[in-house]
Image (cartoon, rainbow, N blue to C red; front, side, top):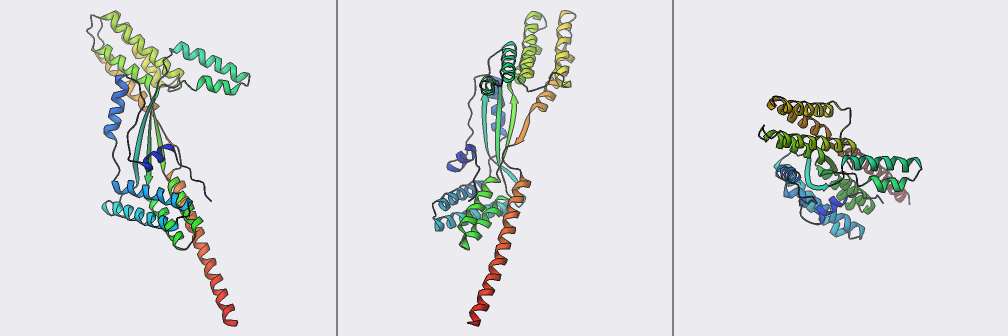
Length: 326
């Protein structure tokens, strides 16, 4: 019997209503980022959510050998999907759930460097587990996890399950439902918090009265420290052009502050550099299975079903001929 690979996010969605959850610190910039994500999050049609919930119920029923209940759940799920697709035939990869989680590391760039140095020493001594325990807390980021349902694949797999169940093939039905569940696609976007902090500090510095040179310089130095933390935590590279440009721009502003303090255009460039770097460091990864693999699974299942049907037909004809001879 096929193993079902579903995440905690999936289970949370299917056992209850979708929700936006987060575990975060009190920094305004992170809260603003999360608020923006929440505002942009589009809720999937209720028919799709209902269809997914009924599919999961069918999986549970099949596991407990409740064939009639499973058949009922699959029919309900298909009806829900059909309704959604009739309303919008162009439905494809539809986000059905989004979760936000923030991680915070309070250490300075020097603390991070010391930890990395010790981790490297432990790895050289092959004390791998200790190195993992030491380095794993080095995360300062906002994780945005989005789960999407491939509407060109998922309902097809559910229909295969119902067809298999109608033929009395419980194992085939279970595997088809498992294929449907495992076709869900999970994207993970990582937003490095130190870059948000650095950007925020630069914006604050740009708003200061030009007579407050000392305060402005302190804010810019803090921004450079945040950038260094981002580099040591692996969110950007030391020789990345955008990263180098940011540091060079901050140095140029600090130099200008000591002179005529005409820095408006320099700040504009710095802000644009931040947008570029943050965009580059947003990592989007498919965590479960992509749509191509999902489609391949469904197609393979269909081929197996077709071969089985041909084999059953041949065996039926053979039995019929033998019966006639008798």
